[in-house]
Length: 191
Image (tube, rainbow, N blue to C red; front, side, top):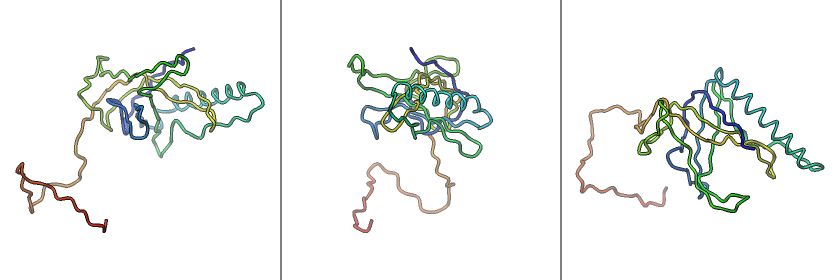
């Protein structure tokens, strides 16, 4: 049975890896994003996540009669002040456990009009998005839990790359900008 698809409330993307997978800690790659939602807007999503977590634990206990099963220590959301941060992921590639076939996948990305999002545009933190997702139960040695698996993303307001450097232009030293300029790398053992 396929897990039900849910749609998040509108939130702010935090550290999104939606255009291409993050391979820093997993060479198979992982699409991921944390969705920052105002606590006042997150009540229904929190209940949905908590209920799915409880169901996963009940199923794991029923499937493992006689064995001690604990709840996974990995949260799918965190509450910080007036905001809730929901964690969503999708493996970019792998091997299907049942069929032993290799697969690759990516979340569908759409614009506000539900048209395909241009892949040459980068989705940066601060973009306003909605996420279609499934809550998938798992049982692992560390406990039973859920994963919020990304199915699709709708970009409502796009934030593209920009400099977050807080300096303003000042009078003073100005570097030469010719194409022959080279940067010296410091090789001192002091650092």
